[in-house]
Amino acid sequence: TWRIMSKLKFALDTDFLIKLANPREKLHQSALDHFNRLIDLEIPMYVSSIVISEFTVKQDISQLQKGIIPIPFTPLDAVLAGKILKAKIQAEKLGDQEISRVCMKDDIKICAQIVNNKLDGLITAETKLYSKLYRYAVDIFKKPYKVCSISNSVETNFPIEKKKENIEIQDKDLFSDV
Image (cartoon, rainbow, N blue to C red; front, side):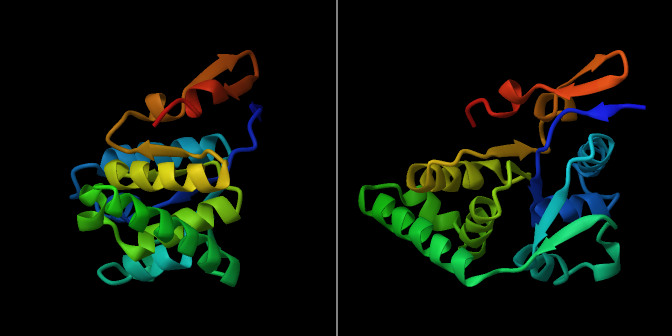
């Protein structure tokens, strides 16, 4: 048997779930590879209730994979999201207009849930947006988390080293700069 050496916990974003559920999506295979790697490594996968609401706009709820843990949006999440939104507004005043065009309030809420639930990262295809929100969240809360793009290989995002009967996640690689 393989013993898992990591206690990592990751959130899944809407775009990841859509690509996972639809075999016609360009990044479907990568999403499937990432999902299977998380299962193999016994890394818990969390999905915000906000992500579920976005996903079910065009997908049936039954297409969500079994074993995904839902996260409700709480009052503390709302407070943390407000702090991230405030940082975003301040950045806009300093000239960071790029994020103001693409930033969605729901994405800010998802970042707040990652921080509040002490998750280690997010798997998404929207890395540009989430990388900016990540910087705001880390500046405020001093709690880094990893933004993993499914446009990268699963080996890039979740490097493993096989040792006899163990799998060891190389955390130093997981938490390199975004």
